[in-house]
Length: 79
Figure (cartoon, helix red, strand yellow):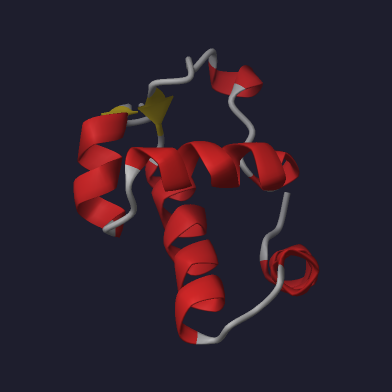
C-alpha cells in the first residue's frame, strides 16, 4: 500500500516551504506525477518527497538552473 503524506508533512520532511513545493510541482511536473494513484494536490508519496529533496539539493546546494535540474532528474529517475 502506498503511504499518502499531507503537504504539511512534506514541508517538515524536505525543509521546503509550501510555496516552493507548489512551484516545483509546476516546473518539474513530469517528475511529480499524481494521476496514477489518484492523489490530490495535497497528498504526496515518499517518492515525491525524495524527488523534492533532490530538487532542493540541486538548486540550493549545487546552484543548478531549472534546465540543469531537469537534465539531472531525467538521468537519475526511472519512470
